[in-house]
Length: 347
Length: 243
Image (cartoon, rainbow over all chains, first blue to last red; front, side, top):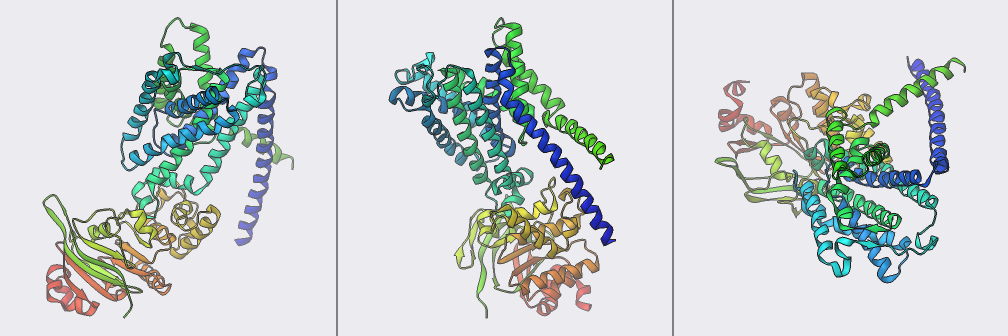
């Protein structure tokens, strides 16, 4: 009995090793593909699309930490995105600070902004957090519109173009922007993975399943959610800085608008909340959707994008409430399973 | 006489017109097992909720290990070494039994690997190690209650409050649970048990507190309680006197 159990285990181990080898090969292929992708694309417009995808992987991944893992629906992440973008661009313009430095400052500014929201909202249960995030983004949008001597009001801010200046995070080719965006997206996903495996990650799962039971065994749910929000806000702020740096132009309606908040949330929701790779998949799908509606209708119908978001959101929530990632996972498992059977036949 | 670990003074709580607990005072000494008995609705669970911070008392004080813990949040109370289980087990249903237990051990061990090893220890202690990889929601009610105890033990408490852990157990299982509680005491833990299973309370407890309609009607050694006419009238029933 004990012997057969032992051999069963070693069988499992061998099979596990084979699957891990295959997984490593697939991961390596995926990484190589991402690295050579911009060189395969016919023109810079397509490179622009994949850069936007990468930035939205980072944004959706950042949102996912509080919205997915933390289970707290934010519909105001534009507040953190816009704060990063504005703080950075204002500093770059006023003091000539390198965006490589304001990248961090913008992130920290967004983090600081998130702290009072966490402290106030996470003592309560209910929709307060969602409402507060919407209110925060809207308040910031109005503030930026109002203080136009500093923020240039509705016209927004531009990053002065200095030519090819890597130290100022400016390039005359899209390629460097692409690779930096990929690093940013990868960093967010790796941080998510690390968070998922940390004490905080475990605690968020416990809180999501039964908050009373979690508190009974010493889990401070308000603190854990606050930490997740702070991390999420920081990463969103950093991505906001990079977005501003890449697009050169930011304005209040774009940076703090509800449309941006919804797009950030949708990336994670469409892909699969509370998973590491969900936002990556969601960003690719969303960006394809957004770009194709823009190409097809070319701005003929103002507000069409928002209708598309709305339609997409309803579709996902009705038919795929866990996002599309589980689909891909089952497809992937079938693939791995087949490979396993094939290699199992020829030892 | 050993030191007083938990000191409850003049605790009161009402819900609307219902006085759930009224002017309740009792002490728990380090190393003892205190039984709390009383009919349904006599305020036993409310008392647990008041002590562990799930409810805020209208009046009265709770001191634990020499410090005032009245009004602290449940996680603060737990961090100080006072943990409770729920009468209706509250597992984290969609994750494994092992990970459930880890939610307790992570309190003192931030490293998930260490917490996992400690979680295996507490699962072994309650006899759940074979089910470590099952989803907690698919456990039987009785195993869920075992898990509840394991998770609480994982927080490495000084005082454990058990809320009807033995309800619905078979005779053998009651004996097992009694052995477990006795062994916990030998490890230096102080235990308060709310229980309807008289055989267990009478055998395990060093002292017993009897509640009726939110107030304490008796306190003493099991033999004294069993002979107390008021307790018999309110709770034990006439047949217990003959037994």
